[in-house]
Length: 212
Image (cartoon, rainbow, N blue to C red; front, side, top):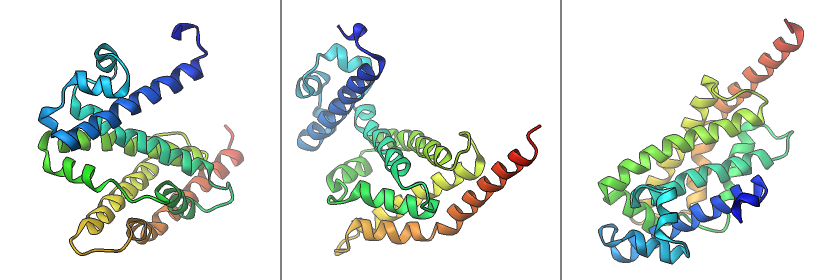
């Protein structure tokens, strides 16, 4: 039984179920239109009961946009896994490049969200959570507690750069790969990332020199 499983395994299974439900909701919405998607169909496609679905999400919009939070968690994992000696600006660029390697963003999903007001509103809520999740990953990488203003600003700037890169990538007639647009946008944030990293080093130096 699930209650008897180790905490790590239970959390892994919950995350997998949550992602499966989100992907099922998205695929059904793309195939049939959001208004024609029912909870029963999402649950069946994910291989769970409607009751299980209701334990995770309160709406179709929330289920679909939860993919944005999942994305932030995986982006954070890529950032944490970058070599420790790598400058923060480089680690962010290369971490996001690794995340997007070999696949372009889901254009159909993006257009669905942009064209559906209820999805667009839910997406903005999920993006706010995602930004904070990514900010926590940045803070962890540079050895700082979560909640620092400069780290939060940097995470917000990374998300803004990603949104702008996506808009450029979506323009008619554009053939440039998304990752090239994103990398160019992220390069502009290097001074901000450098300043955040320098401030972190100063904080840690002050803490060592003034332990009380």
